[in-house]
Image 1 (cartoon, rainbow, N blue to C red):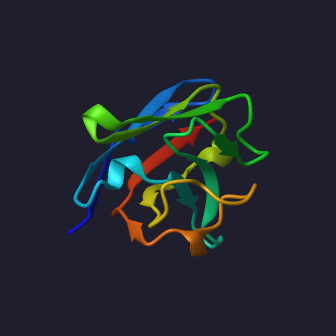
Image 2 (image 1 turned 90 degrees about the vertical axis):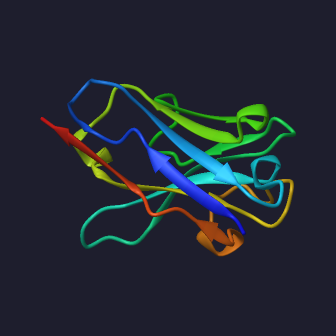
Length: 126
């Protein structure tokens, strides 16, 4: 049984940094394509970044140069380092894992991910 548990969400001021963590368990999930998504009130879920153990990483244009996704297989964890945070980054952030070991495509699309965590809230004030 796959479980994904996010942590690290907090309230910060614009320009600040946060590091989100996702603890993964079950079925070699930490070796698979994993991603971060976010959803704010009244908006659709947005793919933030995805990565796999092959070293590839894909980011949404809105976070390129500010966010870094990393996967630590030995720790069964996924991380998202978020720098230079903006109020528009305010959202519930979700960790997700795919069935595949490598991330397909150049967009972070929810339909490619089978497993989801419960989310961690990030609030950025101006």
